[in-house]
Length: 330
Image (tube, rainbow, N blue to C red; front, side):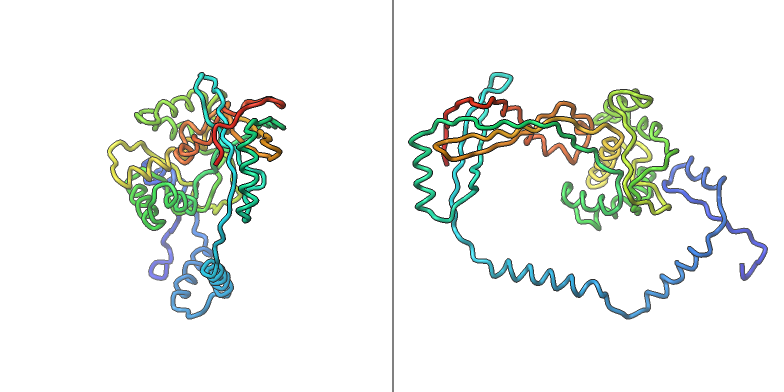
Protein backbone atom coordinates (compact mmCIF):
# COMPACT_ATOMS: atom_id res chain seq x y z
CA UNK A 1 0.00 0.00 0.00
CA UNK A 2 2.97 2.30 0.36
CA UNK A 3 3.51 2.04 -3.38
CA UNK A 4 -0.18 2.10 -4.29
CA UNK A 5 -2.56 3.41 -1.59
CA UNK A 6 -5.58 2.47 -3.71
CA UNK A 7 -4.73 -1.23 -3.93
CA UNK A 8 -7.31 -3.59 -2.42
CA UNK A 9 -5.77 -6.36 -0.29
CA UNK A 10 -7.90 -9.13 1.18
CA UNK A 11 -7.20 -12.46 2.85
CA UNK A 12 -8.49 -15.80 1.59
CA UNK A 13 -8.51 -18.56 4.21
CA UNK A 14 -8.31 -22.25 3.26
CA UNK A 15 -6.92 -25.34 4.98
CA UNK A 16 -6.62 -27.83 2.12
CA UNK A 17 -5.24 -27.54 -1.39
CA UNK A 18 -8.39 -28.72 -3.13
CA UNK A 19 -10.42 -26.81 -5.70
CA UNK A 20 -13.67 -26.31 -3.79
CA UNK A 21 -11.93 -24.90 -0.70
CA UNK A 22 -9.73 -22.55 -2.72
CA UNK A 23 -12.69 -21.30 -4.79
CA UNK A 24 -14.79 -20.79 -1.64
CA UNK A 25 -11.93 -18.93 0.06
CA UNK A 26 -11.50 -16.64 -2.96
CA UNK A 27 -15.21 -15.90 -3.19
CA UNK A 28 -15.41 -15.15 0.54
CA UNK A 29 -12.14 -13.28 1.03
CA UNK A 30 -12.14 -10.98 4.07
CA UNK A 31 -10.38 -7.84 5.17
CA UNK A 32 -6.86 -7.99 6.56
CA UNK A 33 -6.54 -8.05 10.34
CA UNK A 34 -3.81 -5.48 10.96
CA UNK A 35 -3.30 -6.81 14.48
CA UNK A 36 -2.29 -10.18 13.04
CA UNK A 37 -0.02 -8.44 10.54
CA UNK A 38 1.71 -6.61 13.39
CA UNK A 39 2.06 -9.89 15.30
CA UNK A 40 3.97 -11.41 12.38
CA UNK A 41 6.31 -8.40 12.30
CA UNK A 42 6.99 -8.84 16.02
CA UNK A 43 7.90 -12.50 15.44
CA UNK A 44 10.53 -11.36 12.94
CA UNK A 45 11.97 -8.92 15.50
CA UNK A 46 12.16 -11.69 18.11
CA UNK A 47 14.58 -13.65 15.91
CA UNK A 48 17.32 -11.13 16.76
CA UNK A 49 16.60 -11.11 20.51
CA UNK A 50 19.08 -12.73 22.89
CA UNK A 51 17.35 -13.87 26.08
CA UNK A 52 16.81 -16.87 28.31
CA UNK A 53 13.87 -19.12 29.16
CA UNK A 54 12.64 -18.68 32.77
CA UNK A 55 10.74 -21.98 32.53
CA UNK A 56 13.54 -24.05 31.04
CA UNK A 57 15.99 -23.73 33.94
CA UNK A 58 13.64 -25.21 36.61
CA UNK A 59 12.60 -27.92 34.14
CA UNK A 60 16.23 -28.81 33.52
CA UNK A 61 16.62 -29.16 37.29
CA UNK A 62 13.72 -31.66 37.43
CA UNK A 63 15.25 -33.67 34.59
CA UNK A 64 18.65 -33.70 36.28
CA UNK A 65 17.18 -34.79 39.63
CA UNK A 66 15.32 -37.66 38.00
CA UNK A 67 18.44 -38.73 36.10
CA UNK A 68 20.52 -38.76 39.29
CA UNK A 69 17.88 -40.80 41.15
CA UNK A 70 17.85 -43.36 38.35
CA UNK A 71 21.66 -43.44 38.09
CA UNK A 72 22.10 -43.91 41.85
CA UNK A 73 19.32 -46.49 42.23
CA UNK A 74 20.40 -49.80 43.78
CA UNK A 75 18.23 -52.72 42.74
CA UNK A 76 17.02 -55.23 45.33
CA UNK A 77 15.70 -58.71 44.50
CA UNK A 78 12.08 -59.54 45.28
CA UNK A 79 9.72 -62.48 44.84
CA UNK A 80 6.10 -62.87 43.82
CA UNK A 81 3.54 -65.66 43.38
CA UNK A 82 1.39 -66.03 40.27
CA UNK A 83 -1.54 -68.43 40.20
CA UNK A 84 -2.69 -69.80 36.84
CA UNK A 85 -6.16 -71.29 36.45
CA UNK A 86 -7.65 -72.86 33.34
CA UNK A 87 -11.15 -71.72 32.38
CA UNK A 88 -13.30 -73.00 29.55
CA UNK A 89 -14.12 -70.29 27.02
CA UNK A 90 -17.44 -69.92 25.19
CA UNK A 91 -16.03 -71.75 22.15
CA UNK A 92 -15.00 -74.74 24.26
CA UNK A 93 -11.28 -74.00 24.31
CA UNK A 94 -9.36 -73.96 27.56
CA UNK A 95 -7.83 -70.58 28.40
CA UNK A 96 -5.22 -70.07 31.08
CA UNK A 97 -5.84 -67.03 33.28
CA UNK A 98 -3.06 -65.58 35.43
CA UNK A 99 -4.07 -64.20 38.83
CA UNK A 100 -1.73 -61.69 40.45
CA UNK A 101 -0.83 -61.81 44.13
CA UNK A 102 -2.57 -59.16 46.23
CA UNK A 103 0.65 -58.72 48.23
CA UNK A 104 2.33 -57.92 44.88
CA UNK A 105 5.83 -59.00 46.00
CA UNK A 106 8.03 -59.65 49.02
CA UNK A 107 11.68 -58.76 49.53
CA UNK A 108 12.15 -61.54 52.11
CA UNK A 109 12.96 -64.73 50.19
CA UNK A 110 12.34 -67.10 53.11
CA UNK A 111 8.85 -65.71 53.76
CA UNK A 112 7.99 -65.89 50.06
CA UNK A 113 9.08 -69.55 49.92
CA UNK A 114 6.94 -70.46 52.95
CA UNK A 115 3.82 -68.88 51.43
CA UNK A 116 4.58 -70.45 48.05
CA UNK A 117 4.85 -73.92 49.59
CA UNK A 118 1.51 -73.40 51.38
CA UNK A 119 -0.09 -72.78 47.98
CA UNK A 120 1.63 -75.85 46.54
CA UNK A 121 0.32 -78.05 49.37
CA UNK A 122 -3.25 -76.72 49.01
CA UNK A 123 -3.74 -75.62 45.36
CA UNK A 124 -7.54 -75.42 45.47
CA UNK A 125 -8.70 -71.90 44.55
CA UNK A 126 -11.99 -70.48 45.81
CA UNK A 127 -13.62 -67.46 44.19
CA UNK A 128 -14.19 -64.78 46.83
CA UNK A 129 -15.60 -61.84 44.88
CA UNK A 130 -16.75 -61.14 41.33
CA UNK A 131 -17.34 -57.54 40.32
CA UNK A 132 -18.61 -56.44 36.91
CA UNK A 133 -19.33 -52.93 35.69
CA UNK A 134 -20.08 -51.37 32.33
CA UNK A 135 -17.36 -49.32 30.72
CA UNK A 136 -16.95 -47.05 27.71
CA UNK A 137 -13.83 -46.56 25.63
CA UNK A 138 -14.11 -43.08 24.18
CA UNK A 139 -13.30 -42.53 20.53
CA UNK A 140 -10.34 -40.22 19.85
CA UNK A 141 -10.58 -36.46 19.67
CA UNK A 142 -10.00 -34.78 16.28
CA UNK A 143 -6.32 -34.75 15.37
CA UNK A 144 -3.93 -31.89 16.21
CA UNK A 145 -0.29 -31.40 15.20
CA UNK A 146 1.09 -32.39 18.61
CA UNK A 147 -1.07 -35.51 18.77
CA UNK A 148 -0.07 -36.47 15.21
CA UNK A 149 3.60 -36.23 16.14
CA UNK A 150 3.15 -38.14 19.41
CA UNK A 151 1.13 -40.92 17.80
CA UNK A 152 3.47 -41.09 14.81
CA UNK A 153 6.42 -41.56 17.14
CA UNK A 154 4.67 -44.18 19.27
CA UNK A 155 2.77 -46.16 16.63
CA UNK A 156 4.72 -45.60 13.41
CA UNK A 157 8.19 -45.38 14.98
CA UNK A 158 8.93 -42.15 13.11
CA UNK A 159 10.53 -39.04 14.58
CA UNK A 160 8.14 -36.13 15.22
CA UNK A 161 9.94 -34.05 12.58
CA UNK A 162 9.67 -36.85 10.04
CA UNK A 163 5.94 -37.24 10.70
CA UNK A 164 5.31 -33.54 10.18
CA UNK A 165 7.47 -33.40 7.04
CA UNK A 166 5.50 -36.28 5.52
CA UNK A 167 2.17 -34.72 6.52
CA UNK A 168 3.16 -31.43 4.88
CA UNK A 169 4.01 -33.23 1.63
CA UNK A 170 0.62 -34.94 1.71
CA UNK A 171 -0.99 -31.54 2.28
CA UNK A 172 0.85 -30.07 -0.71
CA UNK A 173 -0.41 -32.96 -2.85
CA UNK A 174 -3.99 -32.35 -1.74
CA UNK A 175 -4.44 -35.50 0.35
CA UNK A 176 -4.50 -33.94 3.85
CA UNK A 177 -5.66 -30.69 5.37
CA UNK A 178 -3.11 -28.21 6.71
CA UNK A 179 -1.09 -30.20 9.29
CA UNK A 180 -0.06 -27.34 11.58
CA UNK A 181 -3.02 -26.77 13.87
CA UNK A 182 -3.86 -27.09 17.55
CA UNK A 183 -7.62 -27.12 16.95
CA UNK A 184 -9.33 -30.30 18.18
CA UNK A 185 -12.93 -29.40 17.33
CA UNK A 186 -14.69 -29.18 13.96
CA UNK A 187 -16.92 -26.31 12.92
CA UNK A 188 -20.65 -26.98 13.23
CA UNK A 189 -21.12 -26.64 9.47
CA UNK A 190 -18.26 -29.01 8.60
CA UNK A 191 -19.16 -31.44 5.78
CA UNK A 192 -18.20 -34.87 7.14
CA UNK A 193 -20.35 -36.88 4.73
CA UNK A 194 -18.46 -35.81 1.59
CA UNK A 195 -15.05 -36.55 3.10
CA UNK A 196 -16.15 -39.94 4.44
CA UNK A 197 -17.69 -40.84 1.07
CA UNK A 198 -14.32 -40.24 -0.62
CA UNK A 199 -12.89 -43.12 1.45
CA UNK A 200 -15.60 -45.62 0.48
CA UNK A 201 -13.53 -46.97 -2.43
CA UNK A 202 -10.53 -47.92 -0.31
CA UNK A 203 -9.95 -51.71 -0.14
CA UNK A 204 -8.86 -51.58 3.53
CA UNK A 205 -11.42 -49.28 5.18
CA UNK A 206 -13.85 -48.53 2.36
CA UNK A 207 -16.58 -50.83 3.65
CA UNK A 208 -16.41 -49.19 7.07
CA UNK A 209 -16.55 -45.72 5.51
CA UNK A 210 -19.60 -46.72 3.46
CA UNK A 211 -21.30 -47.88 6.65
CA UNK A 212 -20.70 -44.45 8.19
CA UNK A 213 -22.22 -42.74 5.16
CA UNK A 214 -25.30 -44.98 5.21
CA UNK A 215 -25.89 -44.22 8.90
CA UNK A 216 -25.03 -40.51 8.61
CA UNK A 217 -28.58 -39.31 9.27
CA UNK A 218 -29.06 -41.64 12.22
CA UNK A 219 -27.90 -45.20 12.55
CA UNK A 220 -25.68 -47.70 14.27
CA UNK A 221 -22.26 -46.40 13.18
CA UNK A 222 -21.95 -42.64 12.59
CA UNK A 223 -21.61 -40.16 15.43
CA UNK A 224 -20.33 -36.59 15.15
CA UNK A 225 -16.73 -36.16 16.39
CA UNK A 226 -16.20 -35.06 19.97
CA UNK A 227 -15.27 -31.46 20.66
CA UNK A 228 -11.96 -30.83 22.38
CA UNK A 229 -11.06 -27.68 24.28
CA UNK A 230 -8.73 -26.01 21.78
CA UNK A 231 -9.56 -23.87 18.75
CA UNK A 232 -6.93 -21.65 17.16
CA UNK A 233 -9.57 -20.13 14.83
CA UNK A 234 -7.21 -20.66 11.90
CA UNK A 235 -7.41 -24.25 10.65
CA UNK A 236 -9.60 -27.28 11.39
CA UNK A 237 -8.23 -30.53 12.87
CA UNK A 238 -6.06 -32.61 10.56
CA UNK A 239 -8.16 -34.83 8.27
CA UNK A 240 -7.98 -36.49 4.84
CA UNK A 241 -9.25 -34.32 1.97
CA UNK A 242 -9.04 -36.89 -0.84
CA UNK A 243 -8.64 -40.63 -1.27
CA UNK A 244 -5.08 -41.74 -2.02
CA UNK A 245 -4.39 -45.14 -3.58
CA UNK A 246 -0.87 -44.67 -4.97
CA UNK A 247 1.12 -43.89 -1.83
CA UNK A 248 4.01 -45.92 -0.46
CA UNK A 249 6.47 -45.93 2.41
CA UNK A 250 6.08 -43.35 5.16
CA UNK A 251 3.55 -41.34 3.15
CA UNK A 252 1.22 -44.34 3.05
CA UNK A 253 1.64 -45.02 6.77
CA UNK A 254 1.01 -41.42 7.86
CA UNK A 255 -1.97 -41.08 5.51
CA UNK A 256 -3.47 -44.34 6.78
CA UNK A 257 -3.10 -43.24 10.40
CA UNK A 258 -4.75 -39.85 9.77
CA UNK A 259 -7.59 -41.44 7.78
CA UNK A 260 -8.30 -44.19 10.29
CA UNK A 261 -8.18 -41.63 13.10
CA UNK A 262 -10.66 -39.42 11.23
CA UNK A 263 -13.07 -42.29 10.52
CA UNK A 264 -12.75 -43.42 14.13
CA UNK A 265 -13.58 -39.94 15.39
CA UNK A 266 -16.75 -40.04 13.25
CA UNK A 267 -17.86 -43.31 14.88
CA UNK A 268 -19.54 -44.27 18.13
CA UNK A 269 -17.65 -45.07 21.34
CA UNK A 270 -16.75 -48.68 22.12
CA UNK A 271 -18.92 -50.27 24.82
CA UNK A 272 -18.28 -53.20 27.12
CA UNK A 273 -17.84 -54.20 30.74
CA UNK A 274 -14.95 -55.09 33.02
CA UNK A 275 -14.94 -58.10 35.31
CA UNK A 276 -12.60 -58.45 38.30
CA UNK A 277 -12.35 -61.83 40.00
CA UNK A 278 -10.62 -62.31 43.35
CA UNK A 279 -9.82 -65.80 44.61
CA UNK A 280 -8.14 -67.38 47.61
CA UNK A 281 -5.49 -70.10 47.61
CA UNK A 282 -4.19 -71.30 50.99
CA UNK A 283 -5.46 -68.08 52.61
CA UNK A 284 -3.55 -65.96 50.07
CA UNK A 285 -5.56 -63.60 47.83
CA UNK A 286 -5.08 -63.30 44.06
CA UNK A 287 -6.96 -61.21 41.48
CA UNK A 288 -7.39 -60.90 37.71
CA UNK A 289 -9.37 -58.56 35.49
CA UNK A 290 -10.75 -58.79 31.98
CA UNK A 291 -12.49 -56.41 29.61
CA UNK A 292 -15.33 -57.75 27.47
CA UNK A 293 -16.23 -55.83 24.31
CA UNK A 294 -19.94 -55.72 23.52
CA UNK A 295 -19.89 -53.08 20.76
CA UNK A 296 -16.55 -52.47 19.04
CA UNK A 297 -17.65 -49.46 16.97
CA UNK A 298 -14.61 -47.20 16.36
CA UNK A 299 -12.19 -49.99 17.35
CA UNK A 300 -12.96 -51.67 14.02
CA UNK A 301 -11.16 -48.93 12.11
CA UNK A 302 -8.85 -47.15 14.53
CA UNK A 303 -5.29 -48.35 13.92
CA UNK A 304 -4.12 -46.97 17.28
CA UNK A 305 -6.32 -49.47 19.15
CA UNK A 306 -5.70 -52.65 17.19
CA UNK A 307 -2.74 -53.69 19.36
CA UNK A 308 -4.96 -53.62 22.47
CA UNK A 309 -7.23 -56.43 21.33
CA UNK A 310 -5.18 -58.96 23.29
CA UNK A 311 -6.28 -57.44 26.58
CA UNK A 312 -9.93 -58.23 25.95
CA UNK A 313 -10.85 -61.59 27.35
CA UNK A 314 -14.05 -63.48 28.02
CA UNK A 315 -12.34 -66.00 30.29
CA UNK A 316 -13.27 -64.53 33.66
CA UNK A 317 -16.89 -65.60 33.97
CA UNK A 318 -17.05 -66.98 37.50
CA UNK A 319 -19.50 -67.10 40.36
CA UNK A 320 -18.72 -66.34 43.97
CA UNK A 321 -17.99 -69.63 45.71
CA UNK A 322 -16.74 -71.42 42.58
CA UNK A 323 -13.75 -73.72 43.01
CA UNK A 324 -10.85 -74.39 40.66
CA UNK A 325 -7.43 -75.98 40.86
CA UNK A 326 -4.23 -74.16 40.09
CA UNK A 327 -2.46 -75.57 37.08
CA UNK A 328 0.69 -73.58 37.75
CA UNK A 329 2.37 -71.68 40.55
CA UNK A 330 5.35 -69.46 39.72
